[in-house]
Amino acid sequence: MNCPFCHNCDSRVIDSRSADDGSAIRRRRQCPSCSRRFTTVETAMLSVVKRSGVVEPFSRSKVVSGVRKACQGRPVDDDQLAFLAQKVEDALRAGGAAEVPSDEVGLAILAPLRELDEVAYLRFASVYRSFDTLDDFEAEITLLRAEHEPTGQEPSPIAPPASPHH
Image 1: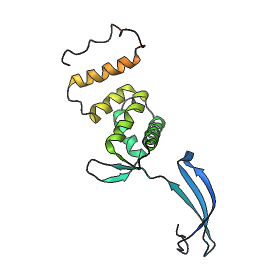
Image 2 (image 1 turned 60 degrees about the vertical axis):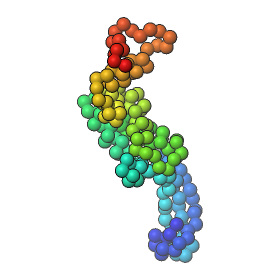
Image 3 (image 1 turned 180 degrees about the vertical axis):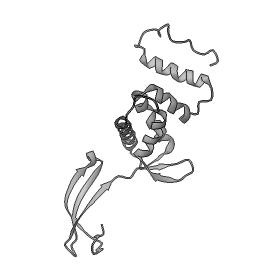
Image 4 (image 1 turned 60 degrees about the horizontal axis):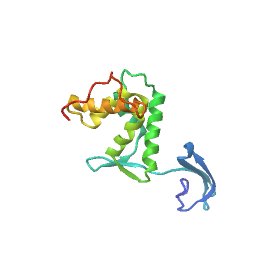
């Protein structure tokens, strides 16, 4: 680590502490040349590989802005969106890869969004998975309804029958 004051290419770590809920390390350093102290913050890089091949740093704010559109008019607040973005980042980091395809980011959004708001989930899934017909929506709604049913019981008579087109 280069000293920001004299640009010496060495420094000595005096203290290390966890920061940002364990996702970063704060290090207090001292330059052996000029004896000045400075602080560094280390984080593990998580990059997203877009379909075009461009690589950019993962951004929670991009997750929030993408999901916010699906949540318009729904009872979802900014804190819930921030928590969802954190869950998405945690899930992607748990995979252990430094670079993830953008498709994996979309997949990582689906489960926490489903837990947060099913209507917003359907909106997001319809765009992300490119729903083309009402049958696509019906199939997804059928899956959501099946998750609400107690296991080992028949679906309630209120649920519409499965589409004969499948």
